[in-house]
Length: 489
Image (cartoon, rainbow, N blue to C red):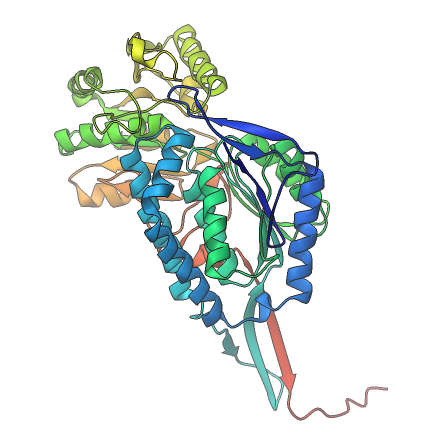
């Protein structure tokens, strides 16, 4: 088995320490790769390369059109190698290969989107009160960007950071999750093939408490973009204060899915399934809080439970599989703990709540899709992000109560509203304190629309034009074309 290396200053290198890490398939715990295991020494080398490339190289001053052409080439190479990337993603994460193929299409779309808008912002001329002067506002790259990505959507989340950073002329050091680095390694190979200059994009593999900590505290890093858990996000905020880094943080959510009695019943049931059990609930936007109008509660829960009984768990490479495993033994134990806590808090477990008994699934990190009813907002199972295939069901009687329940969370990433009353839908969307609100839809996103959260779901936005702006600084330039003495002294 060939060892996968890190990419620093245009070279594929081993870790300074010589350490490596085994990457396992969560379906059966087979070892699928061996990768370099970097630490703060490797991060420092990568940061130095990125700093030098930004301060002394040509990337930041290369025309936006030329940078856009390279970003577009990356999109084309991802499309070319779609099947290889999808297989690597499924080996890494356990998700179905069909999900991974869809991810690759989305990833190519992100690179293509930022390639297309890279040269569309030439700044603006603004009025100046000074005679004979020109006043303009321009957007320039931030500098060296530290980028830390999660394990649930390894390459998708990487694309949301890589594409806008490159398009705007920054240099970067990326740290993927240490347990799912394979597709990120592959896309760095494609970026090298596309012509990204040495030192502009650097990849360091390793743990958050070494590589991530170095990126957060190193004074030569100008921006940190992090997607992950809220507790780590808070640590990064504190660490980044050492040189007042610019921050872009997406810290997850506990997302309400509100269904009114006048919604299309069958569609809402189907989407409620997809909102939670897609990728085994390991999605920051998963609609794990199902909030049902009282008059449809019992029928809806029964329909949901009937469909859950027939879900097929298995290998991501089996086309009949509907849900794969959780990512790791550690995460499986975390999900189990949340379920046990839910029972103790008084939630009513109606289905699931344990590991499957199928002998073929015993080597993997599988957990049965789980539904709790009689849930209230004072329960940790309702408030905490379990990041697993668990639905908690709450009940409401009035529109006002539905909104109150939906907003009763420290998070504010996303939420959904199901109703055929368009006026009510817009009214609810206005009152829901979330970065994204879907009406008669759930878990849909695309590159043109911004993504991020209110409250403790994070700071800043990814995707869309706002995602591009995260990687720029705004500068005002005033030129006096006929300077004259002031004669003040």
